[in-house]
Every structure is written in structure tokens, then in C-alpha cells.
Length: 258
Image 1 (cartoon, one colour):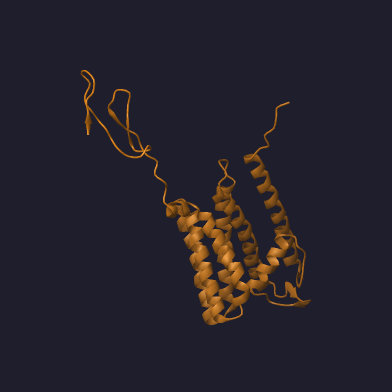
Image 2: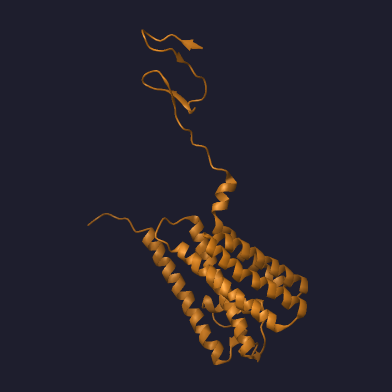
């Protein structure tokens, strides 16, 4: 419907629709285009939460491992979870082509040597897998820390990244302890007797040290395992202190000025 405009003004076409439509009338009576805000798709919002997927993959590994580590099929499942951690971590730290290639170069040998260890049963392949795993986790931790501690707005994705880094630190030290016990047999004792620990036992021991929960049934015996244990305990305490200081800087206390 066309409305007659007074005097010499052009006719104004009357538009029908809701109040938040894209077209509205200007002061001159002409139709002006106003951009509308379209909500972002849920999938796009979730894909931006890269550290959330890393955290979920690590959580799935920690929850699943105690129930499947004693069987060959269960170890294969742990390998698949490590592959999932590899993919999500590469997606999180691969902000550039170089970082992506380095993460893949460290992560793929971890999986390959783990499969060779499962097929052959040779401890040397397992040690190589743990060595590359430690290097991969160290690289991922460095990149995630750079992202989490960067001086800009704190987001939910950064908080997930901070928790993921804490979990990764424990797994990183578990891999290091696994390599250490290969070169120094009897470095750890299980129920008071020297033993070769599997990855599940090493992760359990690493978390007890990182959280300073205290030794349980696994204890360091040799001096080569005692000093790395001290370093991990200090790392756990310092990480929490630095993270709290970072959060305090992001969210300062606001009060009345004196």
C-alpha cells in the first residue's frame, strides 16, 4: 500500500512486519536499511571452545584408564583416547602452520611406538612412545600456557585451558617417570617392593605428587626418582599460585576510593 506524502515529497511505501524488522523509516520519510543481529550458530560457538574439548578428552582418559588398562583391548582403547587428545590438542595449539606441524610431528610417533609396543611387547618401543609423549605434552603445555596467561580478557575457554594444562602437567611427569624407570630399574617401589610401573600407576603417582596429597602405595626409591618428584611437587604449587595471581589481575577488587 502506498501512502500519499504531503507536497513534493516522494511517496513512502508502508512496510509491515515486527518492530525489530531490518527496514525502518528515517526522518525524511525514506526507507533506511538497519542491519539485524543474527545469533551465531551453536556449532560455531562450540568450535571456538577448543580447550574445552582438550579438557574433555583428558577427563575421558583419566576416567577410562583404571578399568581397561589390564587388557590388550583396553590398552588399544587408551591408545584411541590418546589419539583423541592428540587431535584436540593440535586443534587447540595449532594457531599457526608451524605449531600445527610440530605438534603432529611429536604426537604421531607417540601413537606409532605405542602400537608397536602393543604388537611386540618390547619395552624399548614403549619407552620411545613415552619419550615422544613427554615431548608432545611439554610442547602443548607451553602453547596452552601462553594462551591462558596472555594479558587480555579471561574467557571460559581459557579457564578450561588452565585446567587442561594442570592435567597435562601430571601426565607429562608420568611419561618422564616411565622413561626414568627404564634407564634406572627399581626407581619406584609398589607396596614396599621394587616394581616396574605401568602408565596407569605412573599417572596415579604423578597426581599424588602434583597435588601434594602424600605418598601412598607407590614411593620413590632411588635418588634419580626422588629429585624429579621434588620438582613436580614444586611445579604443582607454583602453577596454582601463578594462576591465582593471573586471575586476580584480570578481576581486580573494586571498592570505594579512599
